[in-house]
Amino acid sequence: FDMQTKQVTFHYNGTGLNHPWGIAISPDSRHAVVANCSGNNIALIDLQTDEVSFPFPDAGFNEPCGVAFSPNGALVLVANDSGNNVACIDFHTREATFLEGFHQPMGLSVSRDGTHALVANWGGGNDNIACIDFHTRQATLIGGFQNPSGVSISRDGTHALVANFRGDDKIAQMNFDL
Image 1 (cartoon, helix red, strand yellow):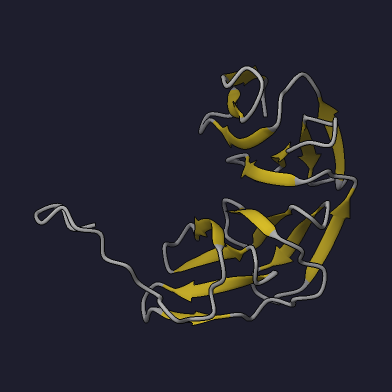
Image 2 (cartoon, rainbow, N blue to C red; image 1 turned 180 degrees about the horizontal axis):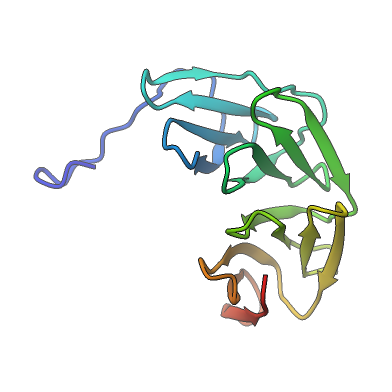
């Protein structure tokens, strides 16, 4: 976006992106990862050269939506909507492991200290937020939401905001200490 002309400039046309959904910029601002929803893969953009590549393994991705970097940039989390799982990708080795037990995960957010992540489980009657503990790789489910689609943890880790897509059309606040 050019502030003077008020025009949007589109980049990365014709690069193999197919319904890009979520995007996250690495903590060092050198890369961005894109959840390529209909392409069923994850794109990597080198923000220094504008090169777009697909270096992450495609196996297991099914309509990826949300993406987030860990605070140190070593891990990329991917909410794999139709795959009903969350991928944990080692950014340096490009190896992916999948955490199971989710239902249409959409948005996600990683705590500033990198110990936890919150994942918005969209629907199927589950309508919850999963809190992943990275030490145990286990998730605790927190209910009471209506089609949560997005979640963001505060910088100080004391609360998170959750977007409820249907039902009450409200933003919920979760208070905790992550």
